[in-house]
Length: 214
Image 1 (spheres, helix red, strand yellow):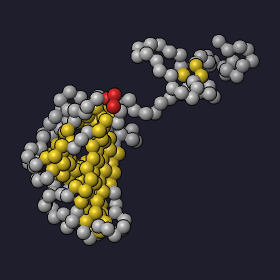
Image 2 (image 1 turned 180 degrees about the horizontal axis):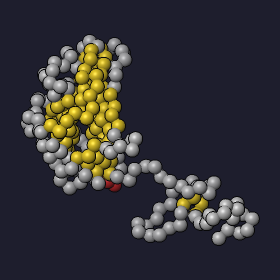
Image 3 (image 1 turned 90 degrees about the vertical axis):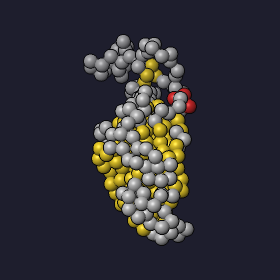
Image 4 (image 1 turned 120 degrees about the vertical axis):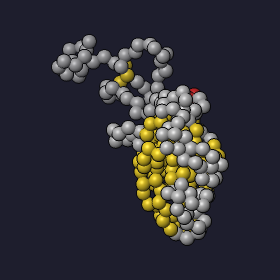
């Protein structure tokens, strides 16, 4: 309880119990009970950093195959729930051009297509290895069952070596009180898809995907 006349005692109905935290973060044993942590002003401290295991995979200067459709795919896990939080695409071509880019969700797995597995990099080494699989395709895969298209935009690709302005695409999921794109089981996946039409000559793309596992 606060002493009479203290600032906390002047707040009617407010029981001020907490521990002022210094500049370093304390380390408490899991499962122990602790008093609330306060900052130096007496306000309750909070940590906005996510606690879920988080991973990213990326590829640079990827050259799409002729008539490219699915070019990158992230498939779910047999043991964890995968939540895709971010996808990005940018690129260049021989001459400045436009590129139609979509994100599609599939209910069954792609097959074939000369996939190259991208390294899944943990944001925290304590989180262990990822269980989702990210593939970039060197040839057209046999697509899994389409659930639907969840994003579709047109991107401007810049002329190689020109220094001209490209239009990078970045989709963030789960930032405005919406759900992330959730993959349950290995059959479910999402792909970056270029529609299956002609790709501008000399196109190379930088791609990345970020996800969590729990």
